[in-house]
Image 1 (cartoon, rainbow, N blue to C red):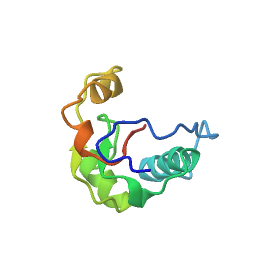
Image 2: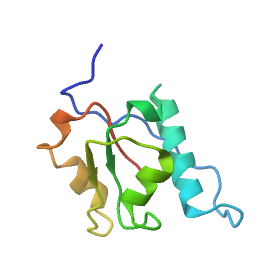
Image 3: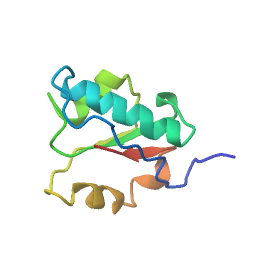
Length: 105
């Protein structure tokens, strides 16, 4: 079954750590992404769209996408406060062209 041309929320995963002084923010993003993709039965190779808010370290979404080794067709790091991910999901003009788009923290 192909996901091309369809929008979906791939998976969800809550990081078990509440305080992680031994991990960088980029490491936490990677672990969260890995967990959400595993929950959906997907891998980083399946992702071609990345949505994040302003909490991504470095150059935001661009830096995290590079850290994760993603090859993307679309990236969005719109920051609207607590509603950023609702805004991302509400941008249907981008979603049909992507295989799998995963908004995560």
